[in-house]
Image 1 (cartoon, rainbow, N blue to C red):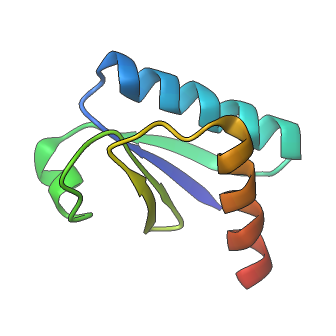
Image 2 (image 1 turned 90 degrees about the vertical axis):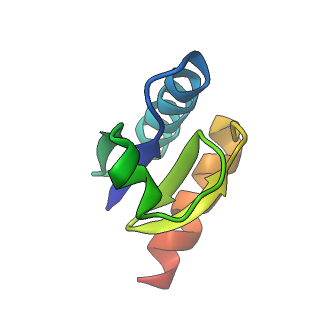
Length: 82
């Protein structure tokens, strides 16, 4: 599983990254967390606001900071769909 944090590295992006790391750890998942910071790379996801969160290439959140609990739900939904 790949979790991508979409953002240029602002404080909101760092909070989202920390929440994602916490969610992955709490679930004990083997997931790669990648920070996508290049504007051109972020634009490929077609989000209008950062920070964004993508799981396995699918955007799950944009323009807000989901809590670790919300991210855990997203991760479990993605895992169940595989």
